Figure 1 (cartoon, rainbow, N blue to C red):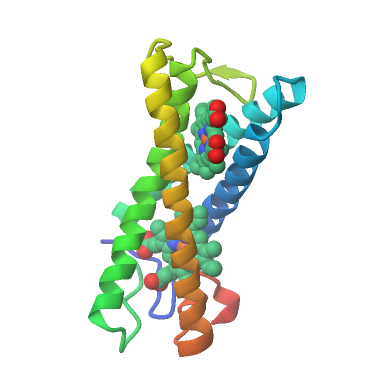
Figure 2: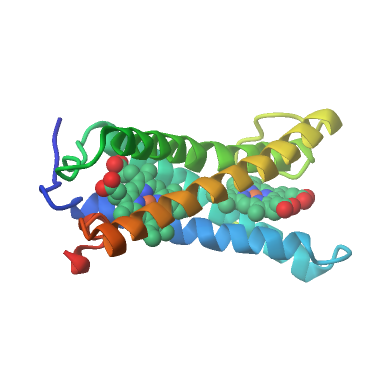
Length: 183
Ligand code: HEM
Ligand code: HEM
């Protein structure tokens, strides 16, 4: 397997993809909470829903590229002295995050279609209408979108806390693997 990683960290492509996706997800998540809290059906609310969908579709497209890139490029070796259970927990969390950055946008997309609202990416391109409007599916995808979002938020919180704990308490350079200026 190809790799641009070194013994102390990830390569530039993995790092760029990681932080671009993280920023877009934080933005989509915050916007999702904010827009759903706006009462009534105002023009602002509709505009924010569109922005939320565009952010989410962008996450999906970059996530597909990221998974393909990762499937063909090895990660840097686990830091020496890492307990086996921690290496397994980290790998498990990373796999789950790769699944969630694909599935969370997909449930949002299908929810929008089931609600009878096709997605027009950036207001320019009408995206495929994969399913017809359907009240039951609408309810299912809404619950799925919200629940998977909270699952992702939980996993990301533990993931970030673990990275910071390793960097600050154990001083083993884990955060530096994704933030080269800390190496
Ligand atoms: C990684 C990408 C995404 C994240 C992090 C995200 C996050 C969220 C969050 C936090 C909410 C508020 C949930 C709540 O009610 O508490 C939400 C709602 C919503 N999302 Fe997403 N979303 C993403 C992608 C998408 C995509 C791609 C679409 C559609 C194309 C979409 C459509 C919606 C819609 C329509 C709602 C409103 C649900 C309602 O009616 O209450 N989302 N999203
Ligand atoms: C939505 C937010 C995030 C997602 C989806 C995400 C996802 C991922 C994934 C999938 C990996 C594994 C990379 C691989 O081996 O292929 C990873 C690694 C990493 N992430 Fe995140 N991450 C997020 C946010 C954060 C934050 C906020 C921090 C730091 C505070 C962070 C720090 C790290 C570090 C240090 C690594 C390398 C871990 C190691 O070498 O074992 N991530 N992340």
